[in-house]
Amino acid sequence: MEKEFKGRVIAGGDLVGEAIVSRNGVNTLATFQKSALKNAKKVICSDQNNPDLYGKLLTGKILCLPKTIGSTTGGLVIQTICSMGINPSAMLFSEPIDSLACSGIILAKNWENSKIIAIDKLGKKFLDYVQSGDKIEIKSDGTVKVIR
Image 1 (cartoon, rainbow, N blue to C red):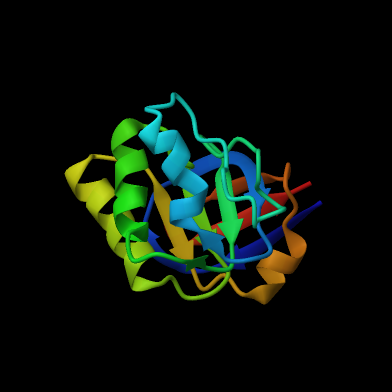
Image 2: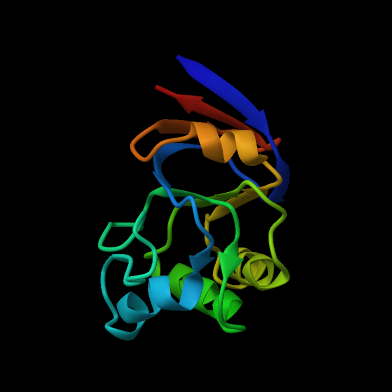
């Protein structure tokens, strides 16, 4: 069974991967900082206030979320984990992306040559439907297919 959604491309690309889903806003600093500071080889979510993601591997996953929240350092944290190569392979936003996350992703794509993909405005139905572990196919035109 599969369902298709269409969003706005922030940083494009084609990808097939595994979803990891947060139903709540993702605090980028709390989620990624510990792994970045430890110069870790992968990101394990360190945000104890996010029960959907806490303690789970995010590196190489397709992070499905409503939005990012928290500190004004959010964009820098995203750029940093991308420069380290430990970032999620994609960030799929059900809501419009915020300027901080957007800037971090764009900087990572252009300055760090990161392959990170970002699509926003996928809608509430996308976040209601997708489950952690689902296979996701992303197309460069903003089409996101959730496959079960």
